[in-house]
Length: 456
Length: 174
Image 1 (cartoon, helix red, strand yellow):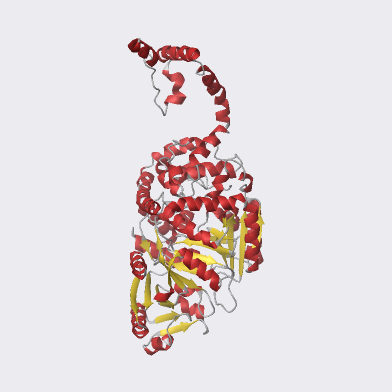
Image 2: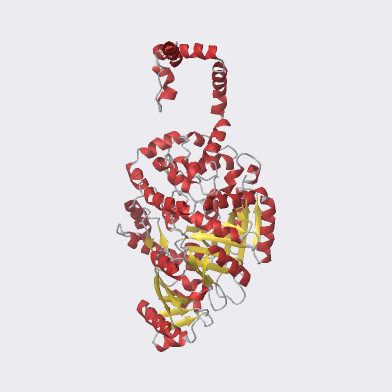
């Protein structure tokens, strides 16, 4: 998770959040999130039983992840695909670069993929002298702006239409109107040239069925279809948890993913790839490579964070999160943002990155309710807080509090002290706590005393 | 089931014709293709005999995958005409299978996609559809399409025709 393109400056989550909240254009753009919230809720409410089934499928997969991966690997190979295993982000980049160089690739077209963001593949391809072009409209806008996606489903959610026009007009070298149709048409024509000349297509994977050896890609624009149709070589980067036991399981997970991601009953395109170009076919890649990406995922198996691997990257937890909805993705300064990002960023970096992210949460548990595969995100956020240095420093105080209130006598003594303290301790000593919270005042006469008076 | 299939396709901004007899459908396809432009690309899996002759007879410039210069001619085509292996009613989608003579790009590159489908190929659910395609043998690429290409990337407001076709018309054969 390196090579950051930071777009909201600030040394920590708190400072970046404050800047995000103070940015009027960003706040205006973020109001558009409401459009998605309502439709997603309707779709999710229509089939409440799907969540149970989906959660069960994801847990079945995780219970024997290595076994399912082995079965998937064999099934993909039987269908003529090449499987590579990458332990780390470095390994994955090297595998992709080796394939790209072996084919003399010069222009690479990319479909939207969080996995390739995670390993910062675009930067690696550019550094190796290739042109790597993001082809999802939102991702293309973000790439031209030198930024990174701020939302995993809608990468340019942080930008208003006039800002998007400015980015595209700069690339075009001429004026463009602030008009959705016109901007889309311009991007379509520009990217079509890239699709026709590209020698390598790179995408992620939404699901991979172990029984049939089938890769499932969920898209709306059609750029993902181009990436898997025209270039001679297609590389799919697949985080290991994307495997599902059976293609039949995809029939359950697919509508749940699209319903929670965009409110659609099904995404506009669902591509099921079960091999490279077949004999006698005139399009489709000659070679199809699948890179299994671990990058600290399998070490989560058997831990209290194992459920995080059930995540299907729908973005529902971002859309409902009161923190995300105000600060947007860049404040997290990480590939994954929102509640799932607060959990995944520290885990995938081995604690090296995003240690302060779990603290940027109100623990309202809206993410738990929104998650289509029932990941207890809020509980994981609490677990992650407990593991940090901040929590370790605070631990003696909590332990002392726990001991003090364990007996009636010391409870009375400490609350009496608190009543005195509330009157005489200067406020500024408590600034760390009261900067963002109210300090409740103890009652002048304690409840127990009043109870005794009225009932004696 | 067919009614709900048609209704949801229309909600997704598809144009749906029929169900109709084959003789009527031949005329409708020629008329719709001509309305979209003079050049058409036609897949081999369209369940209508002699469609290519019909189109050429009506003055359209038609290319097929078994002829030379396919990819260049496809890039200039106004309409891509395909069949479908199967379709799902709920959620509504048509399933296109890649095969020799039926390239993947015919339903992707031209601005208009015309898909010809028998009503008997529509099954109720995704689970039914997946079971059936597995039983018949999975193609190298099976593409499910539920409407014209779209994006919500510009302020989360729906915009049609990003990379794929702006117009999708489904002709149902009774």
